[in-house]
Length: 152
Figure 1: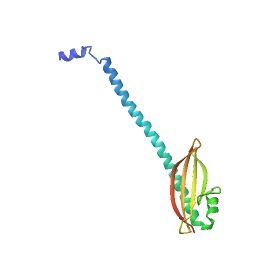
Figure 2: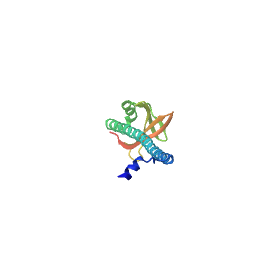
Figure 3: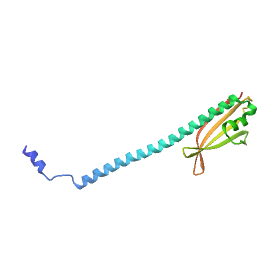
Figure 4: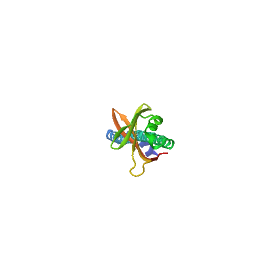
């Protein structure tokens, strides 16, 4: 009992070096945790952008599918322009490319719809829908979907 009382009265404590070492260890641990949190936030933002772009591409593909079911092959260009609100297409390397710009949640997005001629079956049209995110006047491909449409 006397020993315990003497230990409590002793003036022994942590030395300055022990305190500094423990602070350095805590700082290293906290910095690594903060860097993990920052990286997780960046990854979440990129993932959210990809999911949004994929949803836009899927919606546009479903709309193009609906147009192909209601229009015949010869009307495909005007039907896409009128029903999906695209400007006149650009013809490049045997493909018709429609492009339109949308503002979604204050972000500029370009939706590109590309139609090609099928090599052997005339009523089938390969379609590629690309969604580009525009940042600092630079287009970055964020999502792409491909399908083949059968026209009525």
